[in-house]
Length: 185
Length: 247
Image 1 (tube, rainbow over the protein chains, first blue to last red):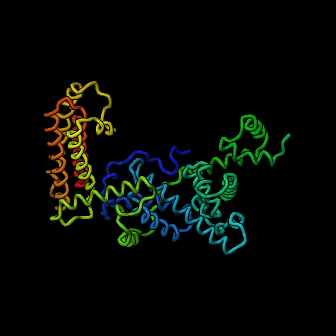
Image 2: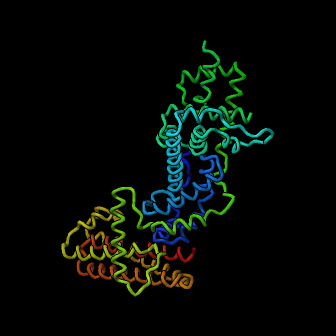
Image 3: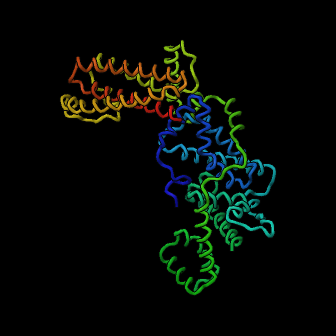
């Protein structure tokens, strides 16, 4: 388990501090530097949580626009990358909850049941690696797996962030692991 | 005897270290005789290790910056965005006030959007005002609010003795930074140079004010601490300017 969920950077980089100060004052060039330094990390998280390249690109852009708007709330108490990571998780999961509510509104089928049913499978003959297999997981199970196994979040924190019961998160993780074992065995 | 399916359900919690010791011991005894569960557990560990070894970053297949740049051009400037919490709103109000003060002092400049050191000038204005406040009150309450300064120094004399080498060191650091900045002056935008110089002028004014006050009242340890803090602000500003010039 990682000491700091999602990001091992715990010290504030003085250069990042300068770039943040400049970006806060409205310097888009400095913010672009911060974008270049962090985009791969943000995009990877968005891709793994969304399981979709086009959606991950949209979410990545949303994250950086939100970061720009919220820069005044960054206190420099943690590394900028850590702050950005938390913002990414909150934004992506917030979007997921909104989408879930919209779908619930349209369908009488409970979200969990809908997401757990009929997991997608990879095309036959495809050489699958773990990354691909993760993207093939149902959304809810994928989210919990990514947050727990890759990003290092505890079940309690995942439950809080996703708005699900802790027991549900454990069940989703169990399901994800089981499916990945089947795929990779 | 617990059945195989029940034991199989323990694979996950066992791998996560969540089983109570008696249940874990029972599961380990089961593992010794169950090749299926051993294989499942080994596979789970492989998945876990592989997940942790996945790259932390993945480059998007196209550059997303253009879309972001277009959107932030329409968004409010970060300094003007609405913060989330009450404390942040208070800080925001302070920053807005600072810029107003600074702008009022520098109307001859076309104020650039790119200068992050503006806040430093506000801090120094506040510090300068604090010198005046201390002189008027002759008190110690301002010093109590300076978290970075040593608390409970054994009297003004000790504070002054301790301060002299510290001042020499800080002045030396300041001189080195000023030299570095001077050498890189050409790389900075003229507006940036103007802002830095404006801030430095304010800081130097505060230093002079605090120095004069200290000479008049050498036993005032709060003034000593305040002067040290003003120097620190100068070092911070110079370091920021040097870093910006290295971007």
